[in-house]
Each structure stands twice: as structure tokens, then as C-alpha cells.
Amino acid sequence: MSRPPLPPFTDATAAEKARLAEDGWNSRDPARVALAYTPDSQWRNRAEFISGRAEIEAFLTRKWTRELDYRLIKEVWAHSGNRIAVRFAYEYRDDSGNWFRAYGNENWEFDADGLMARRLANINEHPITEADRKFHWPLGRRPDDHPGLSHFGF
Image 1 (tube, rainbow, N blue to C red):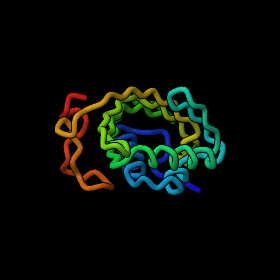
Image 2: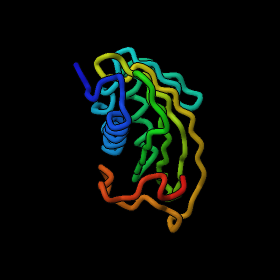
Image 3: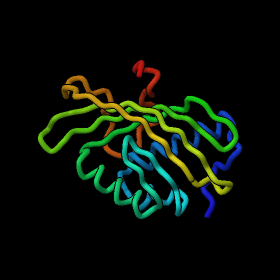
Image 4: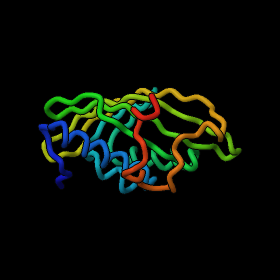
């Protein structure tokens, strides 16, 4: 299975890869998102170590069960060869109506078919008020005309 764009990445294809990842995660469909990773993909997400598509799908299912009204923006920080570094922010609420914003960085490594073989994520989050939210598009894909991270100074 091939997932273009393929490495080595250019500025344009790295940005396209990041946007495709953002779109996938904003779908909140764990099975669909897991297909972007190699069958034996290795993750470090905060202090959790995840291996393979089944564990990725289970992790994302847990995540989006807890993180309601999830909206994410990713932006390329750097790239070289088959690696891309992105920064991101996402907003969500818990089942009590408390809102949060998380910020982080991810380092991605891809195989020759464009599947992500490794994902290393560092994430910090803090509570925000509903009035402090910045990501207001309808659930799903971020509209092309919605500002990105740099616009918000994130």
C-alpha cells in the first residue's frame, strides 16, 4: 500500500503530508487514521509507547472517547529526506464541559511507500475557557480559509 506524497520530501510535499495527517486526525476515525502507519509502526506519545496498527487504533479510540469536539492544526517545522518535524495545537472538551488546548511537536519517519514508521510526540496541555477557544470550524476537516498556527502565535 502506498500513501503519497512519498519521501524524499520537498517543502510542498512535507506540507501536503502534514495537512493529510491533520485531516485524518480531524476525522476522528481511528481505523482510517491507523492505515497511514506501517503495520509495525512505533510510537512514543507522551509517556506511552505504542506498537503497530492495532495498538494505534485502540489508543486513538480511547483518545477521542475522552477528547470531545476535537479540532487540530499541524504545521511543518522542518523536513529532510524521509523525516518531517511538525508542531501542532488542538482543542477539545471533556465530558464535564471543561475545555483544553494542547501544544506539541512530533517527529515523523516514513518508509519508502509513504507510511509513517515512527512517531515521537511531545505534548503539553492546559485548561482554557470556552471563550478562549480559537478553533471554531464545524467538526471534521479544517476549512482551507481557517487560520493556521502561525496566525495565532502558537
